[in-house]
Length: 345
Length: 270
View 1: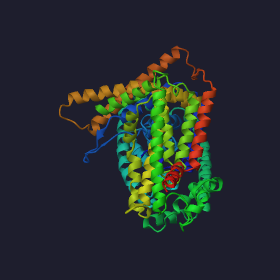
View 2: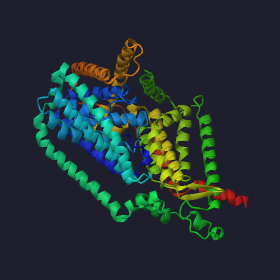
View 3: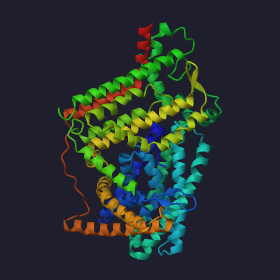
View 4: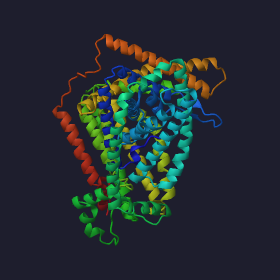
């Protein structure tokens, strides 16, 4: 459920990046205060563990498909929320850089979806409440299952919200929601079972390891208030930005519905940030075709706004220009490669 | 297991690519990181029906691949491997948005197909920019750049640690999986129960390794802080790289170059 750059608008990406940066800085500060130097190598190696574990696929019973671990819950259970959040963020960063899972702009979204929800919501509010200080096999199973399901549902909902606010995908909100939530219910159940089984296995073999994450509970009691304060702040900021969207374009939802029924056509690029940017563009650009070529284009009755419009001549120009652009880019690339070949240095 | 081995090889290959000595590799990692960010923002800021306006931006990956002596075929394969999510979300656009926006002779192209094409172009551009960054810079230098640009040190240290031990632990996982495969004859699928034992075992080994690493670090005077000491200097060429490309991206954002070229061409033909 990695969010992709291609489906994002800069406003959504930027907001989620800001939230992620804030949470990372907050977690880093918390960790520094803990001064638990034992955790530094542990976090690094456990991050690599999640990475390695994700590469092992298992067969999901009765379906024939295969799944793997997401890992946020296991990290939270073993490391506690702050260290787990930073570890998960680092895993997602590596995935974004090396495997192009998601993208750099979407990284903020992905860290929130797959790091924040398991570490700061599902773990403290569900897993810890159910398992408590004295774990048993049944409690671990119940806690991990419930927490993993909730975390994945929230993560999936995050993907839906982020996609919808970006407005690049045509999928209506409810359809996308109905698509994502059930799939992630199944994934969440599997994730919960795996988490419970692995944690149960470790708990049986080395019960003291689980005590590690539960250590320093004194630090956590008062820190919860701060966390909630941070969350509230985040909600206010996000809400502010969202309401800004809503106030400038009250017809966002309407537009999305119309998109499905096929009523509205050219209004789409004028929504939200794209609209704002397009507005700026119109104000600033003194050389767009409808000013520059006015005398020739006058015979066209309709007012050209942007490229998408029904006009054969313009489409032809667009395609020719596009082909020429790509050709030029290719030529420049070949030229550069020849010029900069290792022989020449 | 092919996938584990190939993933490892992939990461290792990126590392190898980043050791080259080309003008691109010699640039300051901060310049490359920031330019990549500006590029991605420029790409995603286009309207959802934009195709022609996005195309000139292809020059950035093309030029960098050329100058950085990076293998284009390999990068294309990596991009295709990452495509499914954007593809499956994007493919709904043609189904849902059936307004004809462009008429090409007898064929009418619906807005959905145009926005789908736009999504795939964005996807290719943003993903290639990220892959080029890592292939021309290497993770260690990217981490250094992040730290200098103000990312929390503990996050950067975590990234470095993670990167170092990915190789070790993936090897470990590979051995576990291979051992199981050798002993299971025709048992091809990895069942749930065996899977959890494998993962649990891997986790125990991981924890034991963390303990050993910790002791080794302690015995070398580790005090909870990791100091990253490596010189980074911004030279003129780094500034030129960043400012030059950024200016170009902004120009491309504002002027639809293919459209202008096309008008020029059709104007000449007339």
